View 1 (cartoon, rainbow, N blue to C red):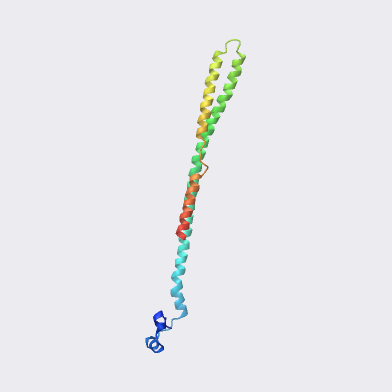
View 2 (view 1 turned 120 degrees about the vertical axis):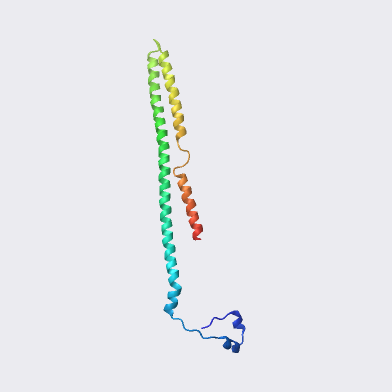
Length: 158
């Protein structure tokens, strides 16, 4: 069989006959082996590489999420400690105010000073605790990184 080009189609039949050269027949199995073997093995390799890349990406994303979670938990722990101190100081302040009220007749000045100091301590600890609360949503950096990696993979596939 011969391959015809546009120029061959415009030729006259005698000219076509002169240009035709017989070609040896190609066995179907041989053609399939030559044409499909590299494509299939190449496809298998691509799929294996894609699976390995995906597994590595998942491992990295899980590690990032784990680190970000640990960091967020540490921040929340510090905030909880500060709020605990503020709560304890507020309770002690209330107790001292009650003692001061009870001693109002005899000499409440020392009890009122201690109550004032405890009130200031409670206010400062509460403010510190409030500032230690993370403002960004949980796992925000991990979400952004995962979305960027997904977009990159989509671009590579397309």
